[in-house]
Length: 349
Image 1: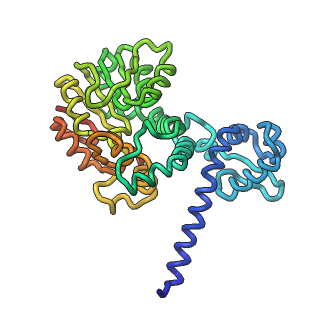
Image 2: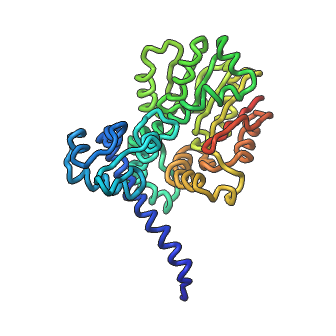
Image 3: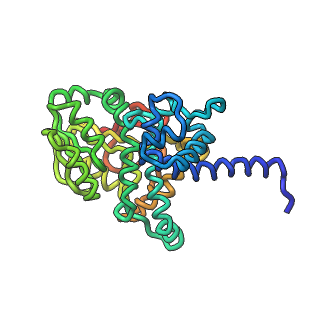
């Protein structure tokens, strides 16, 4: 077999970058757990010794961690003073939890991907799925932390206002169900913003609902319930929301059919899903690369671990999602708004 040297060198360059990214993923989690990023924020240039003292860690480890971070471009390095510094942009990505561009949760969820790799390999060989209930617990914490900053930056200010007549209902008093709510971050943001409305967060994963209930203490207009999307209790909802969860469901059409029965005739269903085009070729880009990988590692196995196992995948695209919504009973579907990472669909009966 004759190799094209130019193509080979290009591929090897990509692979070196991939190995560096994979190695540094673990170091990002270590830096977050040990407060290394947060202690660097607003301090100006620091040495490894100074950062180790500030974080009660060992200097030799910190020196190597800082070197790896600098080589990745995650922190800055000044060769003359041999000091390291976290820029405002780097702090927004690594150190500020509420920043809309904080990415640490995505790295945290990777712990579960590697911890559960053997289960995924088994599913590839023998079929079936890897249910959310089978995942390492860090998957839930990482997923919530990854999505929460984006919800905080967009949900109240942009996404809900893009829906026809919804803000007025929420301000006067509406009944809202947040289906597939996980730890309840999206539910709680809405409940705090609209105290005249009543919010119910629903998720089939009991431990996530326990976390949600802990976070909800002291907030009178919200409650959480462990239930499936296709048969949760309640009716007369003015608004139903699904955040980054429809594609994970085993029976998304069944879930939408149930929502269609539970929602008011003039009610609104808001579905937030990862941004994607309708064809594979549309999604061969850095964002699609992340979402396809997450889909193969987590989303498709989660769906295949449930009844029906539709396995929409995280890059289903608007046309396929619209088909699901139409089959479930919603005749009017439009893209209300979006971000580089999300599409927001508005569906009505």
